[in-house]
Image (cartoon, rainbow, N blue to C red):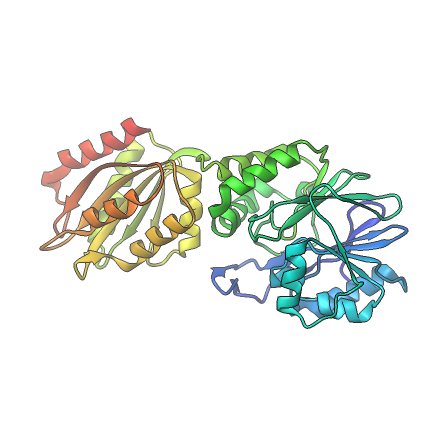
Length: 398
């Protein structure tokens, strides 16, 4: 049985959902699954915008056949060659031998890397600003390299003012029938997963996202159709503003996230005391996370949300406790910047993690490091004044 929805009178969502996949890219937990969005433009020339992951090929083909109702596909626009979107290119080329693959030069190179297909006479090459008429629709192609692969392009439909945005404006989470942003409570139910998707998948490429946002600003966009997550047909400025902030590495909130690595609970206890005192000082939006039990993708997303970060870390084998070390590696890899970081470290005989963390933070761009509070085993009441001074440093920095 097909599962499709109309986006407009002649554009149909033919995507699929995967609620069985545990790890996106075999790395990121997706407890709510993920959607693979694909769109069919039913014009004089039938045009398919991207395909889906191999895991849902059967459902995808059923959706296509239902909407096509015996028609063929004239054009397949390939915006992104990541396998969760390109897996069905070869199969479609076999099923629809007259179909033209619309792609840029880098995309064609990758098609031949992934598939053993003959492309002579079967590819329509496009570059920045080129257009393709499908009848009533005119598709304009906009290159978006490194958002987040080098071949990426997005497509603007001049008739319906739709931006087919590839992986940009995507989010984790399967779609539950309600595919449009105005059918769901996005801020309540989806924003955290959108932030986690952006910060971990695209976060490294802020400059390239800014470039794409500038190009998109020159277009009259009334709808955004991404390859993952809800279709945006209202309140576009809300999500565009989030992307603008995230890609400029500006925090969403003037708040504090406290992330700790604790072996026997003493560092955790110190963090809980710190959190209470920060709250007493009027700080709102405080979040506390155990780096050992929270996936690093969630920690990165929270750092993107918050203006200030407290890293509290036990010394382990004379070094940084591994979950915090893993977080620092991801922070550097994903270009985290423009954050103020306060440090607490702990060690029964030789607390050394703090100094090592400072060195790692100095490798990152535009990170302000506040004074650190060093603990030997347990933070005792006789150090309450030092803790209060530490709190004041954080609050003053806010």
